[in-house]
Length: 164
View 1: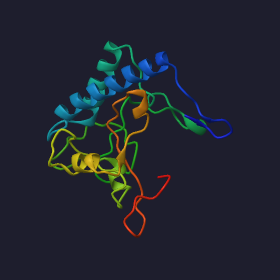
View 2: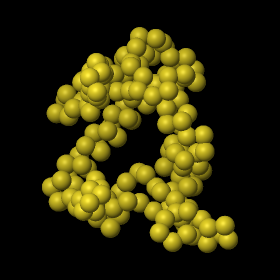
View 3: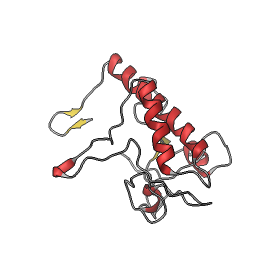
View 4: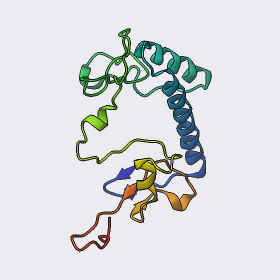
């Protein structure tokens, strides 16, 4: 987290361990959800599984119950945006069809600022980008292994721009 007045807030080893546990739980849930996302399944089924698995792990979703600016609380533990739902779709009993699920951020980032894929598949676009010589990871110096790579900007002459 960045406190604009004080700069970055450094985490303790205990705080980093908590964050690591949370990240592992999210990864496990995403892998389980991937198995459920297929024609005939519903986003309500995916949400029910995620809610059950979170409870087994003693974890909570930041979505469920979230009620900003007096809006009704969000009723689910996952956001399930299908087709023309832009973002934060509420899970439903509508059955999925082949090709239905598209991540909301991919729809809202036509410039390919966000790319999804299998990092373990060397031929995937996301894997190639992660190996790009411009790629860097936040907090690498703290021995973390994030699955998110950022690319440094390139100047018009092809040189990597300083500072990002």
